[in-house]
Every structure is written in structure tokens, then in C-alpha cells.
Image (tube, rainbow, N blue to C red; front, side, top):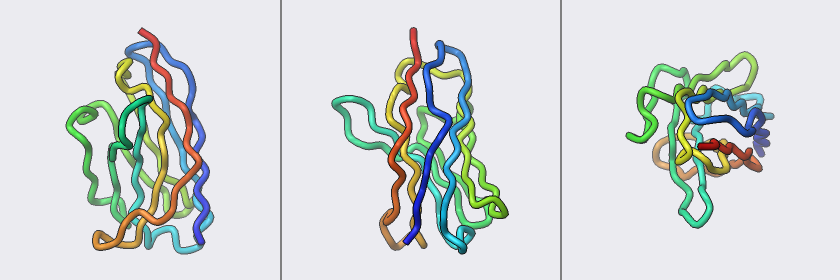
Length: 119
């Protein structure tokens, strides 16, 4: 069982920045692919970005490319999401998730952290 705890959300003005963190309880954190999802009111949950085990491979949804950066520190069992040039449409609850490989679904989820971008 892996527990994920997000932090770092909050209220920010358009153009501002936030850094989300997700701390994992897994002793084998480096064996998980980590991802950030988000869900805005009235919308489906969306995969924003993921990072592979060593951190070399990453992927981003088009709407955040060039503005968001995912990273991980396997020594600290933590994955980060640096969000710059925030827009009102980035407003959502952001969730951290983990899966073992690309054939499996995301089996572990955090409780979410609210990000609100004011216009």
C-alpha cells in the first residue's frame, strides 16, 4: 500500500507560480511511475503530466507544455509539480497518482490539493 500526500496548493493571481509536492510512503518509491492529474468543477479528471521511474522520461498535456515541470527526488520519496505562468483555466483540484508500469492503471491516489488562479 502506498500513501500519497499532496501539498502546496493555494490561491494565486494570473501569471503567478506555485509548486506542488507529493510525498509518498512507499519504500520503493523509485519503482513507481508518478503523475499529476487535475479535475476542474464540472469536468472530467485530466492527466496533466507523468514522470518515469528514474525521472528521465516525462510527458505533458499540450495545455501546460512550457509552463509546468514535473520532477522527482527518489531519495526523498517526493514528486513535484512546478507551475509557472498560471492561467484561470488551470484552476482545479490537483491529484498525485502512482502506478508500477505502463501496462497498469494508476492504483494509488492522493487526496488532492486545490489550486485557484484568479483573473
